[in-house]
Image (cartoon, rainbow, N blue to C red; front, side):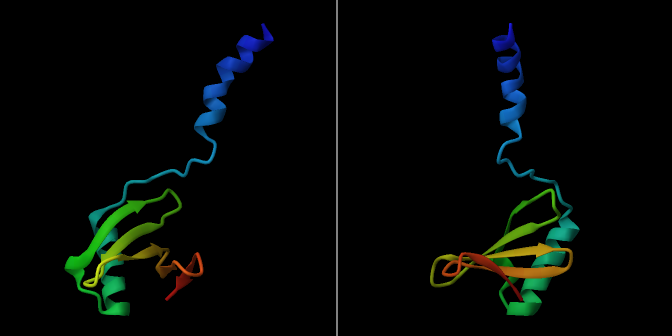
Length: 93
């Protein structure tokens, strides 16, 4: 009997492990984030692409460089950060 209880609870335990919640976000918030990136970096708005939003309020935007590759930006609570591949961390702008 104990085995059946453990197996019944397993999907509940696994579903929350290591999963980050995605969130829906308004077009206005996405555009505000893009405007912040444009103002701080001068990047062309047409090259900025919304990627996702997390439940903690973070909005992730990619910038397609002309030379190829991308820069990753994050907007959260009015703060702008860029992903530094070499350092493996977010840097506030």
